[in-house]
Every structure is written in structure tokens, then in C-alpha cells.
Length: 170
Image 1 (cartoon, helix red, strand yellow):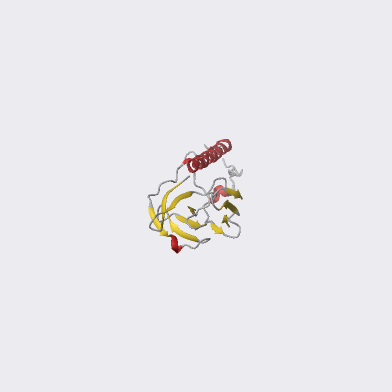
Image 2 (cartoon, one colour; image 1 turned 120 degrees about the vertical axis):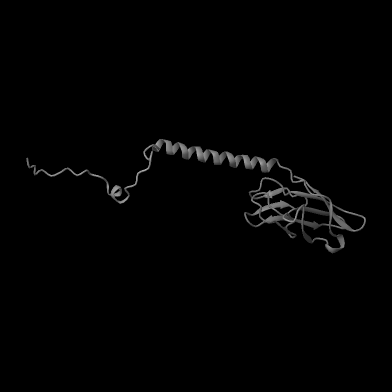
């Protein structure tokens, strides 16, 4: 018997012809499961962010050992002096307000870690990244996005005329 009917051709999408590879279990992830994985991943990242924020708020930065910074006579009244404390990677700054009136702070803004500098005419510490401002003598937040004061470094002028760093306050 001779059958002249056309042989049925299976209809497959064009991408199947171009990419004929199949993976075991390629049909197992549904849209609902994919959305669940996305939400779970985003939730995990959000929880990690909250944990990191809590850790940075609760950790102490009072880790420095006492050491000499600079001679008092080398810093004019109203001027600043940059130094590293407690380690080589920790920028710090001090300002001399009077004969023996000296305060020092970490130079990292508590908002995002940008460098703060002293504005003598405004009597404040200023962070140019997001316009954060801190009170000159206490480091308290005056304006801007920072929510925590600058990390204060205890300093004292000793009898030998040297300014010493004693430790940092949170």
C-alpha cells in the first residue's frame, strides 16, 4: 500500500531548533518558586543589613593605647592637627581652642565614613559628602543625615608640653 499523505511534522518553537539542549529538571522551578526565592534572598539581605547596623551602633571604638601625638607648641590656638589613632588606618584630628583646651575626634563621619574637617569660622566639624555638621567641642550632631556624634578621642596636655591621646569614646 502506498500512502501519499504527508507525514505530520512536530511543531516546535524556533528557539528549540536553535538551542536543542535539555537539562535534567529544567521544568521544575515554577514562577511561584522563583518569586519565593527572590523574596527569601531579599529578606536575607535586609536582615543582614539590619544586623550590620546594630553591630556598628553597639561596638565600642575605645581601643587605643595612650601615646603622645604632638607638642602643644606645634599647634597654634584655633588650628588643627591631623594624626592617626588608634591605628595607622584610623584618621583623627584635634583642634586647639585655648592655652591647654584641646579636643580630638575620629575624622570619619558617622554617617558613611567620609572625612570631616574643622570650619573655624562656623565652629563646627563639617562633612562635605552629605552636608553633615557636628558641634566643635563635643562632636554632637548639629545637622545633616548623621545620627551619632563623632567618635571622641580623650586627650590631655601633659607637664612635658606634649598632647597625649588616651582612648576613644563611642
